[in-house]
Each structure stands twice: as structure tokens, then as C-alpha cells.
Image (cartoon, rainbow, N blue to C red; front, side):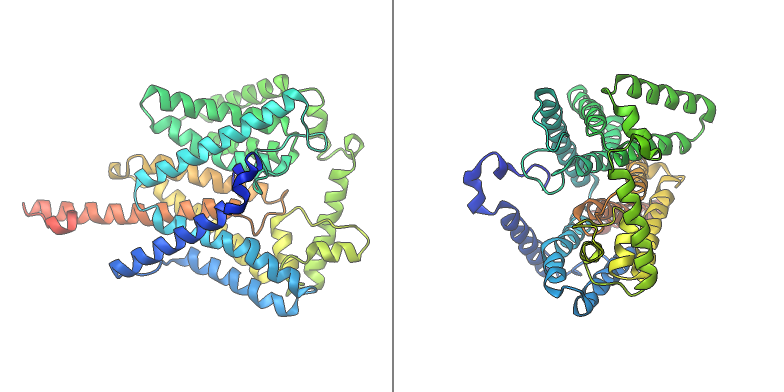
Length: 402
């Protein structure tokens, strides 16, 4: 998903690595659940909201402008994203597993960053800009590359803060530096805004620290980034609002957002999963889709699912804040991980205004981490409280504590 090694080694193409991995993961997990006679999945409000979104996507197909296209998007992208979400939410049952998963994501981002930086250095550009490794769907263009890096940056910070061995810490620091550098040279306006929003989040959520020095530090960091950025980067960012400095893409996307909003009002129950670009084509705008997650959902699935999606993001952010604000030492580094996950969710909430990725893996990977962490922290504090209760009686329930 992140690197697509078959792009470098064509001999791997017939093996269908992604499909085989998915089938093995689902089969293994299902057998594990059946053998242990436990529920198929943890349940909660967030998971129910995702199931409602899937239901609305399925319901939209019979009324779609092109049923075949909606059906293909459902099975080729959306359900795969939801399956990955459920696997992450249910398999990440310890901090060790979460750390291993986040290290994997960090290494993948470092590889993509190195590929992008090297392509920029050698001039091997994609339509004048860089992209990620191989033929990965998550990094196949500059904007998606910037998005994938931004969403993992908070977890790199978590690994830096909680890692004590020198070499792993240096790897995490290096991955963070490479990711920031790569985001800049993607020339992605949405990527830059999302990166600055992450920085602002960490400043505003610092506890026990003076806000003014932190803001000065942020201004200094931004000034350094802008001074070291390649030629034309400042004009590229300015074109977000000043269309006179734009190559036409910013004004076109703004027009698509206006049309997407109008479509949402004219079709409050949506025009069918993935049909936004077909509507744009019918109106003579070519095969383009609205670059906004919220308008993408509202115009395709309806206003109600769009509201549910906003509620879903909000509840995930709030659940992480509850963990982060918990005044208990027992949670330990979970508090740091909750802050990182909250930052990643905030980053997606901001990036969602600039990317047409409502059904892709990006959000569902982060949501899976958030749900897993929420369940893990609740389970951990519950076990700890019961353990304390028994210890006051000078008696431990060994089977439970085990």
C-alpha cells in the first residue's frame, strides 16, 4: 500500500501480494476469533458510525448515475479500507503491537521521502513534481504523498519521545526530518497547510508551558522552512488565495468545491458512490472530482452521511483527548500516543478540505489506531483498578491479572 515493491520488481506482479496478504490476515484473524470464542470485533459508537457510512454507500448504488462504477469503487477501495480499519482496531491489543505498527509506518514514510527527494534531485519528476515509491496508490501523486507523510508525522514524534535507545531514536528523528523536507518539495499547498496545522496543534496543546514562547518558536520554525524551501515555494503557497500566482489548479478546485456544494444542496441524498466526477463531466468540467472529503461524501452519499462522518472524526478526537487528559500515571506512554493520534486526526480533518480521499485508506488507518488505543487504555485502566482493589485486601486474582 505504501511502497508497492512490484513497481520495482515486476516479477512480483503475478503474486498479488496485497490481495494474498489481505486474505491471510482476514483468515488468520477469523480463525483466531473462532478458536478463542470471542466476539468478531470490539464495538463502540465510532465503529457503528463507520458501519452506517458503509450502509449508506451500499444503499446509494441502486440509485447511482453509474451503478457499475459505484460497485467497483465499493469493492476495489472502500470495503478494503474498512477491512483494514477493523483489523487494526482489533489486532492492536498491546502497546508493543502498536509501536511495531507505527515503526513500520515510519519506515515506509522514510522510504517514500527518500525516493521523492532523490527524484527531485535527479529531475525524475511526475508532471513537474515528485511522487512516492513505486506505484503505490497512497503516494501515487505529490498531494497524496504529502498527505500520507503528514498523517504519520505525529507518530514519529511519539516514537522520538518514548524511545530511549540512541539508534532507534536517531532513525525516528531522521524519518521526521526527511518527511518534512519531502512535504515541502511536493509543492502541495494542502500538504503545507496540514503540516502547519500539526505544528500549531502541538503548540496549543502543550500543558504547563507558556504559549507565547511556543508561538515564537513556531514562527522561527516556519521561517526556517520557508527560507530553505526551493525557489517558487512561497508563490506556490500564496496561490492558495491569490489566483494571479496560480497555474489554474487552485481556481479550478475552488470552482469544483462551489459546484460540489451546489450538488449537495440539489441532491441531498447523493448521486451515488464515486459519482461526483461523473457529474462534473456532465457539466463540461472534464473528469475531475471535488477536492474536499466532506463535499465528496455529501454530494455522493448525501448530507446525512457527511454529518455522520464529521461526528465520527469529532468523537475520535474527543476520545483521544480523554485519554490524554487522564490524570493517571498508569497509562504512561499511552498519554503520549493519544496526543499523537489526536494530532493525526486533526491533521486529517484539515487535509480533508483539500483532498478527495473519503473512501481511501488514509483516514481508516488512523481511525483504527484511535479505536484500538481507546479500547486498550480502557482495558488497561480497568485491569489496574481491579488489581488495586484486590491489593488492598492483600489478595490478588492471579488469573485475571495474568
